[in-house]
Length: 530
Image 1 (cartoon, rainbow, N blue to C red):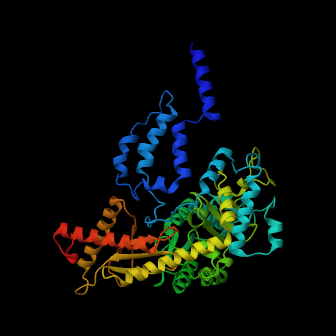
Image 2 (tube, one colour):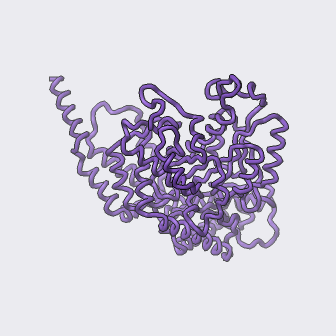
Image 3 (tube, rainbow, N blue to C red):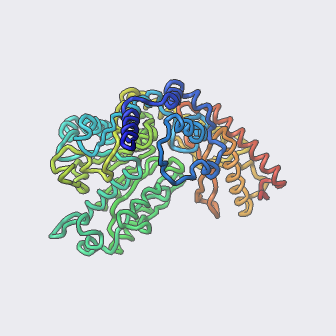
């Protein structure tokens, strides 16, 4: 009897893994694929249920003993997950680096998932491996503009790779700095190399007291993770001052390098930012490249956000000097409109990734075409398929139009804020990110108490707007010249091509109403807000 039941269950499982998909699940999928915008319109921009309120539906920590019907699970997903999801596709969701996706991505993602290729090894990704190498080459050419002979030699080389896909910018940045550390502390004069003997032995062999990396004060927090993981330590991720354009201060950078060298601290990398997360600022990459060259340092550029500006003839000069970088990171899941997560590390020198090359007899053997030899991650999905398709279906001209349009919209929004009697522009958009705050023309110079009151009001406004679910802006805290304490600001990211100036006016109008309501509830004027 028990054996028969097991047989029945096994047959049931085989159906699930073959083609028998529940109709309710198919219906949800059809809603998403066939009518994306109407489907998403049923979800608020920032659903009013807070994460802690939803925890009641996810309390059980036990794996179900008996199978759940697919239709029952579909109901659960629709009612408790989809219904409370954040509508990042909304043109009034302008708070983070995510956006609406092209409609063709959904069926392509289904193909990718169904094929389930593993890019660690050609035995599990025969056609996907050369496809991924081609996408890496396309983005490499976007950055470095090497000639045809270079790509003919290295695009599908068995010995080298000119870049790798990662699950996001964090892993891509860690990989780039892993390369930089291993290159700096490579095998020499009987020393096996840091990758074999470790950081302590490497410092002793080379006569260094410590290691450091330098980045502007707007550097992404993934760099602190890299410093931690690579044994450099977060304390030795040295923060460099920025100018009024949020670009790294070359004078301060040179001074800090000189001071570190005097203390026998080796520089693992200078890190330039092309599109800072908080303000969208771009470092002077030409100046940084010259400083890196003068000091013999690895020059890495985090262009996870701003790399897309290279598609634009009008704006690519903002990233002038990026081709001098030893390594560059671009996130395809940001302004290349690919699903999360797809980060790409590109290396100027085809031998750079050799410094982190790994082998395993059973899977990634020496001299193989396997991309897993050069990646921090082992198993990886074939998301390059989606990037490849997006680059081809849209093409250079479409990406140029998209980046030009979103930067223009951001600049128009900044002008709208400047012209308003209710708001103050804090950081103007270099690319398509800006910050501002609610701040009507003051009746008198702002005291420290008044600054704190505005900070509290800005925080409360952002929370209430998010809870209302009609629109979403994020907030951050910036240390600014001329302010005694950090300033809380609204942070806006214009990446969605569906976002218009009309939508942005509605966001500001809503904020004015929220501010008036909060001030009325408190019984205080702006500068006494509690």
